[in-house]
Image 1 (cartoon, rainbow, N blue to C red):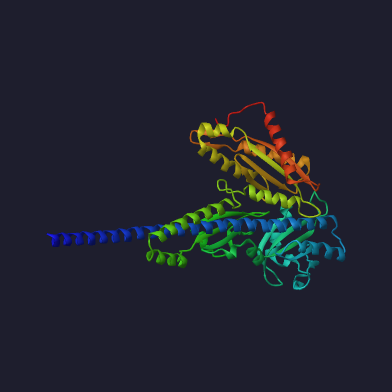
Image 2 (image 1 turned 90 degrees about the horizontal axis):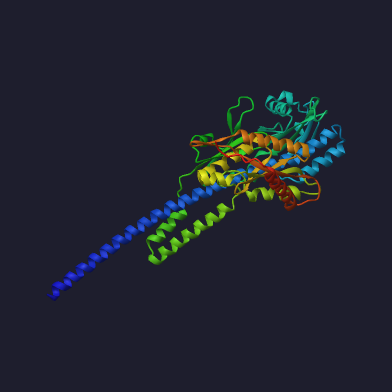
Length: 456
């Protein structure tokens, strides 16, 4: 009997051990599979975030160079026949403020007469743009629009590829009928790509497209055009003259680091497995923190508070001569009523709708951002006159009122209150501008005596 019991105990022990090992293998493989899937998912999320951040940096770099160059164009407009010494001085100051500029030139009657720096750009001096159809088309576009046009990438006669900001110059500003010539500000294309961080993105193939000026068809200016066939992420890139498209497609992850971690998991005890679970939690926490620190509002996909506040501080404290601009604070009227009556999903849809309509109502060079909740902010660059600002505000208000949002059986009619504050080069602060705009916005909201339902 004892021998039989011992035999049965051994069999039970062996079976228990076998079952335990089997369960351990099953649990281990399940955990490894989950770990792998989540790690790859996190890797893709981080890559998508890097693409979104690179988009923002690309827009900011082109916008910064355009605004820097706008002062040069204004200077030439006031004094087209400036002396060589003054030309050298003004152009040199422009180059001190940017690392991505390659050269700048002026072309009366569309023939380059001066260029800075001259070293390395001698071949461009005396170039008649009418003999280079590709470049002449962009100059003609700038002249017709009476505003800056970003051309490129263009192969330069002196070698290399560049984006070129074309500024038309008129002798009779603001009537703009007597064309003098143009100012061309050349930005090294590779420098722009490097500054944006696009070239440093890992884990995905990225490509950049814009519309061809002649045919209107999309042309790939960076990366492989096949990325646009099945992109995992596609974002608009807003430049001062048009909208580009940025796309990315994730790579199949080999994740050598992940494989090493899996091999370690398979050779360690339950305690180490628990440690890896803790590590995953920390990784997700780090991911969420980095995501919250991003510059794009997750719901509306426009710049968020962090981005726009940094831009405002840069504009106000941008040197001896601060930029001129007007700040608009915009608040949705009766937003709570939409949430309460139609649900928060309808409220979210309304926020996305208003964000898109605000972008359509202003120039592509202006900044539209979400401060939070139902508040938006718009920066009207190079607008500091009260009459001009109020005309734009009225245009925005009419545009929003005319753009209804169908929602199931209802139609939501957006209504907004707008306050503004102008910066015309005076000594001020971001806090003061926001306070003035906020006071005007709520004053406007209080004056609205007629209450209109936000849907019909």
